[in-house]
Image (cartoon, rainbow, N blue to C red; front, side, top):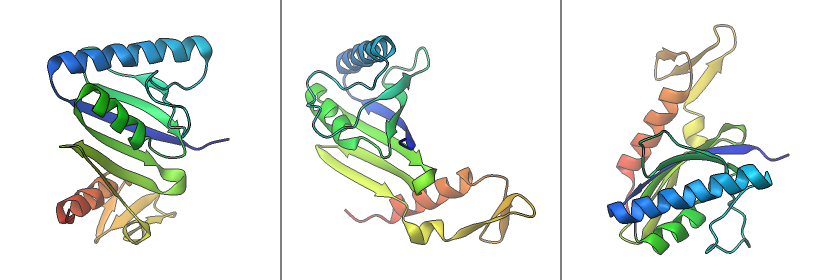
Length: 160
């Protein structure tokens, strides 16, 4: 059984393109519910996986989608969608069972993936006795804020 990678993607572009993407995601969601299997857009070949599962979004949030993929994010599929509709995107993803946590951006036709590696994950630790995380002398109830901090630092220091 696959580990599920949680994804949030925000598409940015012309309003007409965002509306077309909204329709695409609505169609994929309906098809997934009917067929009970992951979906890809019709124009994306199904040779490399990257299927969308459990698609959802908040009413009124056009261009912002949440979904799951098996094992890892599907940035290449999102890139194909972005190229097809001539838009950009930012994808945040995490699958903590395999220490996968990062952000992919597609802007000006360039795909950039920045993710935490082992050395970042080693910067904090879980204290089983207190059920808290320790990071840079501070105590945290969960690792969410720590991971966000580490990723933001890595993004800030990224050299293209």
